[in-house]
Structure formats: structure tokens, C-alpha cells
Length: 110
Image 1 (cartoon, helix red, strand yellow):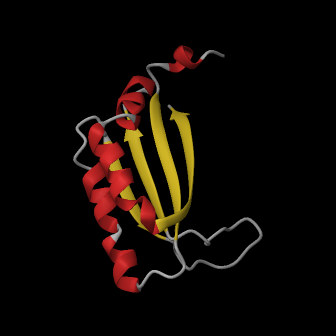
Image 2 (image 1 turned 45 degrees about the vertical axis):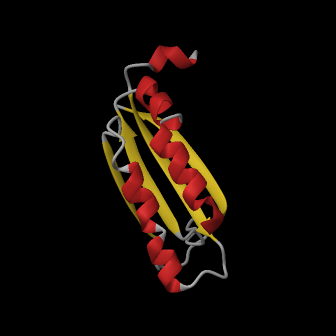
Image 3 (image 1 turned 30 degrees about the horizontal axis):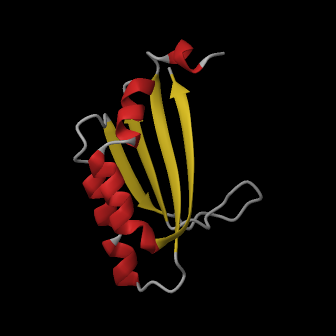
């Protein structure tokens, strides 16, 4: 199906961050300011973030990431605006030196 076929469906933006191994605990905690900047973008419907949980190890569990971000957007148009919003781009420039890996999962939700 074409991307525009789902233009009115809510989008969940799920991002995993692996921060550099040599960061202090203070630097890891300071990285949370990145998410607080993103919260100021008006097009964001909701935004939550947190540290990896030390849950029971199982084959299907990956606790190797440092932080995750879960943001929701009204539709594909809004997440497109977010992706190119000056605050989003500035936050990436300001904080990208903290991470070594980032993975993004976007999904339509009903």
C-alpha cells in the first residue's frame, strides 16, 4: 500500500538509544535533557522516555539499550513535520555525541 493510504492513522515513534560505554552515570542522566527538548515540539501528541529495565533474561528480551523514547503523532503528516522540525534537528546536533547507536521503529496504530 502507498504511504499516503494511512495518512489519518496515529503513528507511534519508538526509538532505542545505545549511549557510549565510556559515559559517566551523570552524563547518562544528563542525556535525558535531549528528550525534554523534544517534548517542546508542538506537533508531538505524547512523548515518554526511560532507561532500560533489568527484567528477567529471556531469548526474546533485549535490555542492551540505554534509553528508549516513545512518541505519538496524530498522523504521518505530523511525524513528517517532527522529523524536520528545527528543535528536533538541533537536539540531535547537540546530543548525538552521546550515542553510538540509534534504532527507530515507526508504526501505524488504530
